[in-house]
Image (cartoon, helix red, strand yellow):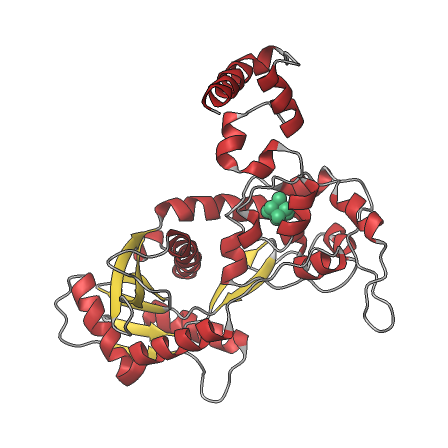
Length: 365
Ligand code: SF4
């Protein structure tokens, strides 16, 4: 791993001189869900604690799995990994259509008694690079550089090597019922797996050494029987690569902001934030946001940005944003629909569609 340059001092100023919040696979995956949002890119590049920010702004966002889902997920994973991943291996044989007689199993969770991240990462790197054919690697600790900082990624991942090629295996606890799973959960698992594929490729230095298709393992129907599905993550890898490069270009992101801008919460002696909410809101307003309803499930600032976007057509979702391109507010759209405002030459086409839609609705009402 290359030696990292010192972080840009403007990032510490933006954070209010507190340590950066560390990324994990979930937060890195979330970077790709709204790549057009400058606000999110700046906050994540600076390692700002968006959850603390949202709470202080009085727009807390509930995030994370329920304890029931976590317990169920852990039990399912333990079942698959029992006896050196015996059940998982049977599934992989079927899914990847492999004729395997013997498979080695390497657990990389600790190195002797040493569980430090640096030691585990080095050991994982050695094992993955030279660990031999037909091997299941459990708990490898991968590393990525995100916005100039090292991020360790510990997947519930099993990386399976066969004939010199790795396959990322992602175990999830959401059910596949009658061959169908919740599309939003599959999409989230795909992007998280893409993070692991990306990190594994970086570690090995050979993109072709890691398959574009990951194996997603979920419980089948209402049982604990596993089912495996191959998921192509090429599209997710492209978006991820774009967003990580964008975060590396710290200078471009920061040079558009006013000098001295800070989102620090100014904690008092007891750790409680003292920064006036109005001041913080104004500081956030310096970074353009691109709210869409999806933000509520992907970004800690979702409720804040939704409130800020009230009355904007963007807040109604991507489909509406695309159909009403150039019409920024709901009030403008209504005026165009009712014919009380003609709009400018760029809005003529949208205005005609809105007037037709309004007429159809009034005739059928
Ligand atoms: S919630 Fe706000 S900051 Fe987060 S991605 Fe959406 S618009 Fe950007």
